[in-house]
Each structure stands twice: as C-alpha cells, then as structure tokens.
Length: 373
Image (tube, rainbow, N blue to C red):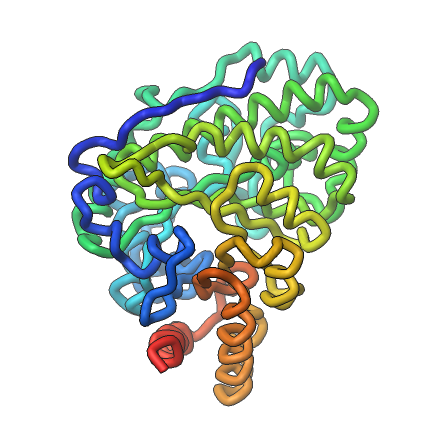
C-alpha cells in the first residue's frame, strides 16, 4: 500500500481560512512565531478532573458512546476552555474510536481501558482485519465526529480546536495485545517474527487514524496532534524501522490542508518515553514535537537542532505539590522552552483524574503572566 497523499484546500468557512484562529498565540507558536503571551493547554484537560464532566457522565452512558454523541463530545471539549481559559480545546475522543468506526469490536472496561473481542496475533488475523475494510475521511461513520467538531468550533470562536488521534503503533499495540499492556510484548514479538504482517497492520492503523484526524481538520480543527502513548516501549532501532514510516503515513492524511494564504494546518507529534528518537518523530513530518516530563526542553531542543517548536512539559505529579514548588517548576519549564523557536506549555503527560481543577486554572494564569513578563 502506497503512502496516501491528499492535498486539499480547507473549506471557506474553516477558522484558519476566515482568519478566526490564524493569529491566535497557539497557532502562531505551532508555526514557530512567539507571541507576547505563551500559550498553554493540557493533555486530558477535559474529563475526570472536572466536576462538571462527572455530572454530565452521571447517566452512565459508555465512554465510547459519549465520544460519538456530538452534543456531549462538544460540551466536554468546551468545559476546560470555559473553566481554565486555556488557549486551545483538544477534541474529546478516545484513541480507539477510529477502530470502532472501522468495525472493530472494542469497549472501554472500567478500571482497565480498551478491551477487544479478539486480539490480532497472526498474519491471518491481520488479513482478516485489513480485509474487513478501513476508514475514509468522508465516510458516513465519521459524521458524529464532524458534527461534534462543527459544534465546538462554533462555540470557541477565536480559540483554536486541536484535532486528536492516536499514532499507529499505539493502535496496533492495543489490537495485538487485546487490552492495555505494560510492556507490549506481543506487539513487539509480532513486529519481529512476522514483519510483513506487522507492516500491513501498521499501514491499516495509519490509514484509519489518519482519516479520523483529517475529518476533524476539515470540519474545523485548527491543528492536529498525533498521540503515541506506548512508543516508549520501543528501542530507537525498532521505532525507526518498524514504526516511523506508519506515523509518517498517518500524518500524510493531514498534510497539505491549506488556508487561502497557503499556510497549512500545523501538526504536533507527542510520544511518552520517546527521548531517544525525538528526531525520528520530527522526520515523520510533524511541525511541532511534544516532550514528556522526563526530558528538559532545552535538551529536547538541542536534539532537534534548535529549529523545532516544542510543546510541554510540566510534570503532572507536581500538580499535587505545594504551589511554590509547582510555580518554580513551571518557570523553569518556561525558561528552558526559550531555547526553541516557540513554545506551547503543556504537561509532560495527561491531567491526573484527582487533580484539583483550581490548580490548573491558577497554572494557566501563571503561564500567561510569566510569558507577558
């Protein structure tokens, strides 16, 4: 399967085309331009840390059904923007949503995470999965996603929405393991025992998640982020040979989406535990690299040659620390972020569910004030 190429102008009503979000501090930072105020948003800013989210989910609708309810997904996306005054919304969804839309039987088990009806462990399993069909950005199955994005963008105005998608390795790891795993041993085993089957699986995952991301961008998201939650289980050699080509393929679905002035939708690539191959992640055609909490931003910038905008990387554990500790850490992150052409403040992973929301609100104010200073 050849890597897809999908050049296409953004719709006339897209917020990057109309200019509604083009000059926002977030989009400018993603394009390598520093604004007077440093932008900030948080991975997993929507969800369990917010009492309004817990109240909304009190009807016990399943997680995946919630993600595919346009009104609910939009409202959940908007909640942290209203509460914290962050500089972007991140589309509320789940990494396995495109798998479900492509026909994979998956549910989110409480206290466990994604659980699949059957694992994909052999070449025959891969062939059955791939033969069952894929996903295109114009598929009717994606209409709930497009509608949720449209609803959200209409409410956000000048605040950009970031599209959300899981990277191919993270999707493949879930499929092969059949459930969450600590070491992704079965996925890494398939990678080496049957590299042809692995490559077919990764290409399929890349196209499914790429179509999912592209649909969000065409519907109005002003940037896109590819999340590789489990890539940290890989060696550099395995990532470069067996994973990076599929990540590039996924991002290619979003490449070439351009506003009338020719500027394209910026793309962010984030992985957890990926310090040893940040450069390879950048080479997958990302504009911005997200850095987890393990690697100082100035070191990340050095690895990337000092030319790449960065996102990150406050340690989520420090959200529970005394305020002076969190403040000092945040100012250090801001200082180190000056080594990059531009910097978007974020956490080095997602917001823990027991986080005090008032801490996040206070943190946003600190970043904005410190950036202005």
